[in-house]
Image (cartoon, rainbow, N blue to C red):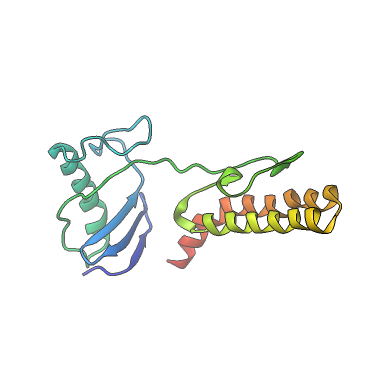
Length: 171
């Protein structure tokens, strides 16, 4: 029986997360020739209930996971499948004039590291206290708000790199 989370390194990598006693989330990159249809618009695979598509996904999971994770015995079926591309970007400026960006509007990256929400909340808290100082206490807007980009942009850039590295080091 498989329990918990597992990252199986190799080519291609596999990440498995137990989300219920009999349900695993299985993440891996796509490979040419695996029989899984390409999605040009990154939406859920249409017709995953199609027997051929479901069989291709099961073959893919079995060929990757069962050979590298002996505690798994078999897979019964596919509950849901989707294709997504990992985007890694950060805006060049977190603020321009009176326009400020925070969270996913400022940086997007792989969900593996788990820092996305935390980083976005920290962006918002940093900006909120600065706006409060300017509005309520009469702080110098140029100085106080001008520091937002300098403080948060390096964090957003670091998050792009650290996410996957942390996951690999933990496992």
